[in-house]
Length: 162
Image (cartoon, rainbow, N blue to C red):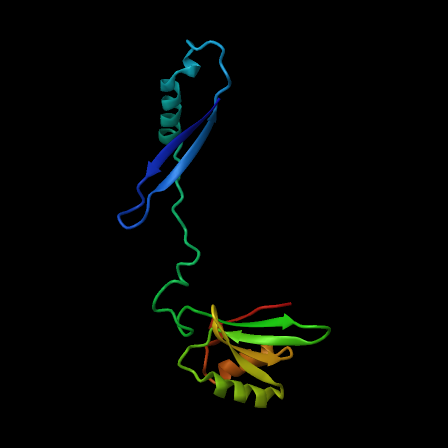
């Protein structure tokens, strides 16, 4: 017989309560009059676990809490992501996403194309917004360019790939 204890913990006025499930395995007892089949035994075991063993009930953790913040921009907590995508053979594509919306993407793209002698485009993505795409592996070049131009601080750039 497997028994489940459902214990509720209040985690605060504005958050939802956390629950802790304790599974206690009680073997089948052919003698129902013995104390092992009694409900009070089960309750005493649960009380023992909660009082004697200092059980820490973990609080809920939301990994997307920072992403849902209203006042997050590329200059504050949000990062500029520079990624590389492998195409076919030795061909690759560098993407830059997460720049502030107040910047002119086309002017940045024009300067990047002139600086690194490569072609590129600005793509409108429904989830990510505007994304700059450049031909070739330009990750290091783009990160140094964005820092030197004062568009993004170095600590707010994340370079992905290989």
